[in-house]
Length: 379
Image 1 (tube, rainbow, N blue to C red):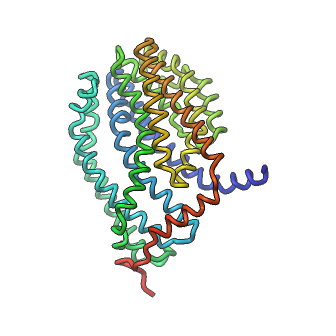
Image 2: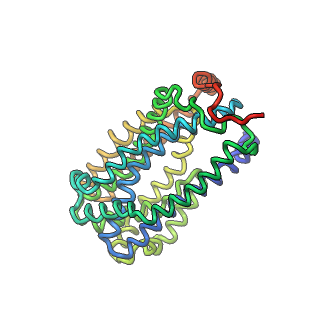
Image 3: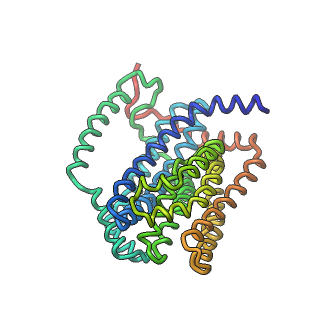
């Protein structure tokens, strides 16, 4: 058993290290925005928290969730040595995600009335809307798109003309439009699974806005989340994060804000942060297993029950009825995550892996499209 575990660690390490780096860099981008806004004032930090996390992550969760269908199918196709399907799955996902981006852009354009409808403070909602709309400034976007176009042309040449890709079917293929409803069904299940998980954390931000003094409580809550936002992929890393946060709890919050009140509130919330990190050291691993096996629909139902029928009502009860405030909201969130983690552990240990292999083979056979691509490498 120990030898098998050691071998698995050796196989996972090269895959996990780049993934951890990507998540850390993505979170660093978000955190840097919070840092600059936090030193402008508490209202600005609250607005950035609401705009960057409460609203943007609603869209981010949906798009990332739909994209996770590619992880399931490409991982299984690669394992089955059906390399020609990797590009097809990628192109199918691109078509669906592009279509999904249109209504999300409309939601960004009307962010302020939507925030007011959700009961947010007018001052913070207005500032959050400006934060979101500022991302539509034309000149920087034009420069970025020009650079992206140059890179796109180079990569397009590499994918369609160069033999260095090492696999056929690298170019565009009409197979990308084949069986879109079936692919959309798996993408929808993936999106629901991840959206329910991502939005669960963001609901805390929105509910926090209905507490007294949201411009003080929300930054504390958001800073606490950012301090532990490393998306830990193992229990060992989780333990390290708990120790690090506990040791520097009185200092780390000043990176995000110079306000004494917010810093004290962050220190007061850190015990809950420690509990969150401990649970999140296990839960992402189990969710990764679910994505790899194609259990997205099952996990979506689990998320609905644990998060929205137990976690959020419990948090609202503790936060508003029993006057625990942010601590009550966060405590309910931890309770929901803990229950979800326990259920996923139970499912994982009871899984018939031979049956899962057969299910993966059937899924690949169903979507295996061997038609020649429109642009194919020629001998």
